[in-house]
Length: 363
Ligand code: SAH
Image (cartoon, rainbow, N blue to C red; front, side, top):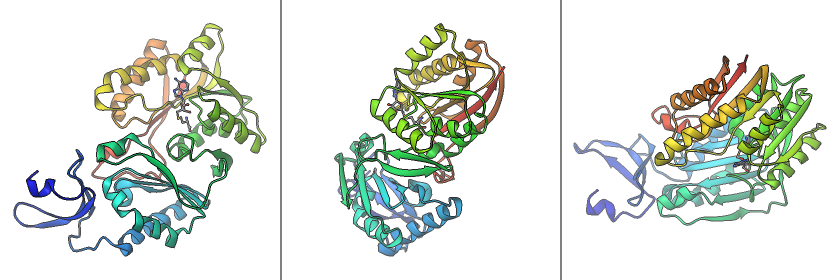
């Protein structure tokens, strides 16, 4: 990077010109970030103005309207929706944003105006507390850009009702990315007992209960998450037994007492938080699979997932295989999937496909 580039203001819009003078596109540039350039358009003449941002939002909304009957989804998934560094999750007339790059922080006034024009939400939360902001030289903050949020916010997913804590919960409050994987678990849950480790607000647990599971246990170390899961269960007229515990310890305790379940779900927080954690985190997925598989009754089902960007689908599948073989369990993979379609993947950025989920039947 030359001195002129280093002097550019973080997050400013730049025209990208190659060494031969060819104009390649426009993007935002941050001299302080490892990913200096984030491309916004391959049209080098396009103006990055209100019309541009509104057009990105309009296209993203049209896709979600096509995919989903109800207004509960990820509206903007960063690069693949043409706004690198921006996440917008929609909960009806409440939206929560994560602004993760200096480029998007600089465009925030245009983004808020575009949201107003396209969605007109009653409340807009800026959930800008992700440590990735530090890599961009941005400070961490949470604040309302519009309106107020009173208590947990209601949402719907696959016909089930939920409550999410947008301000106090994880990320923007709800993990819409698991929508299709939750439906896949629900599809095998009828007539079976289910245990959902790392249940958070009960996404897997409540949908399995609604699908006719005989008994559903939700395990999480967070009291607040379990309160939301119980409240969501009640709103759907089903029962979920909350267990506050550390997941591995609870898996070992249940195994020692000989308990088995028809369906075991383990969708933990990211075990691999950075490249240097890969070896340790990968071992975590192996151990998790081994312990979880041990709790599955013969003919039952296991869903294991990883939301770590830094472990590839192949490497994750390898850890799952190791875990199964150490547990002495065979079976068949029914589904190897990523996130739902409201989390699209940029075709040239395969690493933006962070979620891995495998559903297996075990013998
Ligand atoms: N499966 C959830 C998402 C999981 S988010 C869903 O479908 O929405 C991660 C959750 O794991 C959080 O609720 C967090 O409280 C919980 N957690 C993190 N570490 C844990 C541990 N060691 N034992 C139990 N729960 C843990």
